Image 1 (cartoon, rainbow, N blue to C red):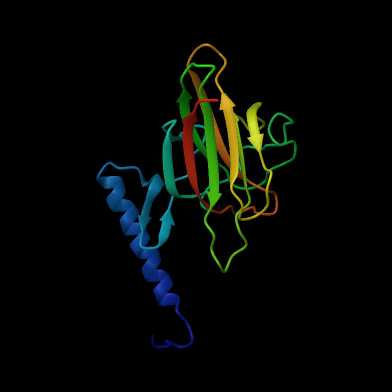
Image 2 (cartoon, rainbow, N blue to C red):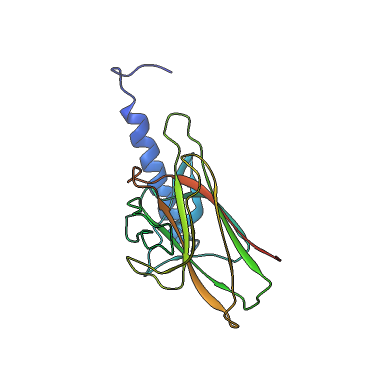
Length: 187
């Protein structure tokens, strides 16, 4: 590749323009930009309390990211993880069917980027969506670059609307990229 005054800014601008055009085309054809990949860049719409990303109770979402999201929720409630999570949040919504024998398992696996510190996800499940939620379950057991898995059984006797929050550990204010797996299993 030829050097251009010692800078590759034009390549970055071209990739950004390609991602922008790709996002526009996806939005125009009626599909969600939440999981759309343009080039090798991840294009992600931020899931918020007001507009969460819809999630099936059995799904795999590749190329997810909190990089364009903001910090709207905190896992410092003892029912979540017990300390502040100042990372950017991505919020998903799903309804867990009523059954005391069906377990929802959410696994968030960071995407490893060799030139960056690995993303350290924090994952929690809530019934409501507020800045300081009461959590049904929460997990941050491992460090940067490691997958986190949270599980929950619906014992309410009725369908249970849930929010899945992918947050970030305090030192990663900008977030990271990951794959989200949701699965229903029998205990």
